[in-house]
Image (cartoon, rainbow, N blue to C red; front, side, top):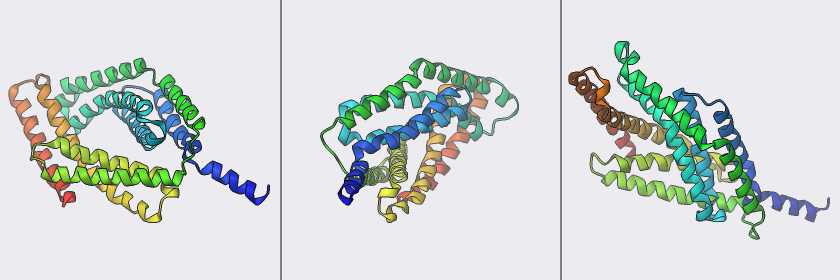
Length: 274
């Protein structure tokens, strides 16, 4: 092959439209493997949840080329599936934060956790993720491969990272101004950090090397705000299900424990907003 042919082939491989499948196929395969091994265990469900989150981020990255109308219904579907997968893990985290043992760990609270896992399993099976994932990949590949536009992958990667970085900065500013009980603003910081981190991991080979240095700080941000979110979600969950405790005193004691943990984690997370 002459030099012009080699360059043409290299150019064809470097456009974002033709590269989508290379990024999407491993994520779809991971999600399919999780679906195939699906059971009611919280960690199994959490692994599926992470796979779907990463896939949603990839769809967001390619949204300028695919169009919002084609991408957002897919992302919304995977978000609902991920939320269903998270219900059981919420109970697992609450048990962990409460240091549950003895009668509490084997009684109503553990029963609620098992029931949530079984419900999540049923919901996910009914969603038919196996066919939804394969149909999504086929549909989006077809749309991209028949597009008359060709966009360099490097340009798409840099632009989407830039957008995600600006979005995270805005979310952090809102969190600094948020009222003490406005945890929604803090949760948005976590989601923004997660999106940017995933993008940097996806596109590391086509981004400037300095971008990869952000991953460590993003993991720290995601970890601290994730732990805060765990405490907030656990407190809310237990407050909604006080009936699982033998009496009011035990319910109040559990909520008090979670309240103290939530405040401690908030202080730690706040240090990263300075």
